[in-house]
Length: 269
Ligand SMILES: NC(=O)c1ccc[n+]([C@@H]2O[C@H](COP(=O)([O-])OP(=O)(O)OC[C@H]3O[C@@H](n4cnc5c(N)ncnc54)[C@H](OP(=O)(O)O)[C@@H]3O)[C@@H](O)[C@H]2O)c1
Image 1 (cartoon, rainbow, N blue to C red):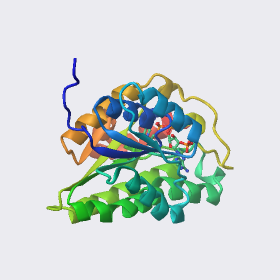
Image 2 (image 1 turned 120 degrees about the vertical axis):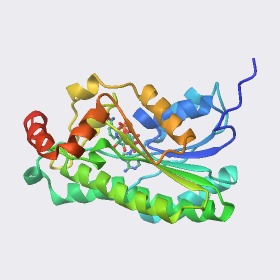
Image 3 (image 1 turned 90 degrees about the vertical axis):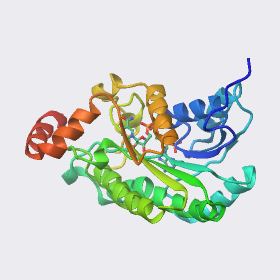
């Protein structure tokens, strides 16, 4: 039976952090919906595995390794991405690293690295792609932030700062793109069952190498990807994704004193 046409048919989508977790699930889901994909992160073999898993749905997956901390390389990498399919319709800024260390235990170099990857990496890659989107009069920039972009918990100071910064920057960008036919969607996940805590940086920059129990019981990356896709199709400005995420956002917004007291007790373990 022929596949029904979808919103993503033949759209060219560039996804960072596509080799694992939410990015890999999103790549698969978009492949099933007919998108042409450019997949990036540092680990080329993980990207190749994702491309192979997409093969039953599409031959159009271009593996383009990239380190989000190496901003000087982005103009060349973006030129290679653009040359491959001749256009980029959507950029999904998803790659990122988390943190598990108290402020006083965190080397400044770790703060700098998290900011360089999570915040400046997304900013620099967007700037490398935006002129093309403006020239063709269409585009969609998806920013995978976190619920930690709207609130904060212990052990993630640099991570929370990097995600808060994304909201300031990309909300401002959206306001500049009104009437330009370019959309900006901020995604705020929480508690998605990926290896993010295992890869999170400790105070000296080494990997935390443990699965957070709350993460382990979390939402599947596939369910998260489905919600991100719905938000993109509806061109939503922002979407919260994850178990109970709306309740914590509500408590933080309307009862911040309660949130601040409770979070300090439950999150430092
Ligand atoms: N899981 C959750 O509950 C949760 C909650 C809130 C927000 N998020 C956000 O969701 C996004 C995806 O995370 P995930 O949960 O799917 O975890 P993940 O599996 O660890 O994915 C993170 C991805 O980012 C890539 N990455 C890390 N550093 C990079 C760098 N310097 N350059 C290029 N790529 C880099 C990693 O690939 P390489 O190591 O191969 O480079 C990896 O594929 C992140 O932005 C994260 O902050 C996740």
